[in-house]
Image (cartoon, rainbow, N blue to C red):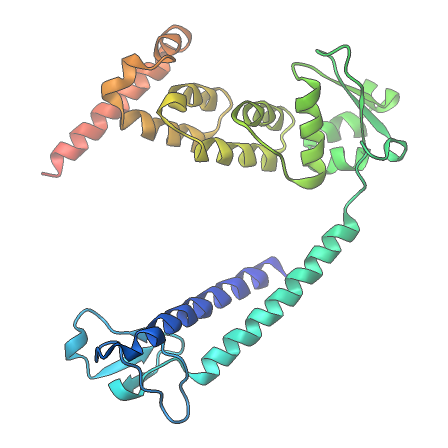
Length: 291
């Protein structure tokens, strides 16, 4: 199944399952005595009611099926039996295809080099932790995940000849989490690990990892972290994180100078402080112009 077909199928299922959910809610209220919610099943085509009643419910002379867009009288409204059945069949097909994809992914996944070091052909060494053990990894994984590693291992460089890649400015735990992500596309993040892995993602051009960590930091955003995240996002070119951080800062301008990271930002990157105030003034001007 192509990616486009899978997305189309998922959208199709979402549409009809949502309609079915509405129909169940409407059916439960059918016995309340309210004519607006009362559902009368048509004799042939319609089953559960998935109704579009509009804003003037009392004035409607017909109701439209949200599944197929056909119109019915008020006493003959509901989701078409054909639409309902088609949605169920499509859902079952999607479930089967998802299970097949899971099985294929499981079959194609390389074994962890940490569990099976004899199967690895490259060693990663965290140079900042002399007591740490080297981390074995497959060359194929490095080359396929990172264009930086690809250049190291496909050109006539020291790393290719020695089979050892030295990684600086990283702890053993962070490097191990990095390697695990290259194999699984998953990581058990906290704020610090997310920042550390994002730096590695930027350094070795592992875009998926960088995006993964950026989304985590955005999800955990609050006022206490906003200024630090803003400076961090600027340093490592994280556009979404920078935008989200700035939005939180602008919503808390009255407390800006009280934030513990404000003075640090003034000293380290006053340009960003100017940018914050400029953006705030533009926002205030635009808001005033709407009245």
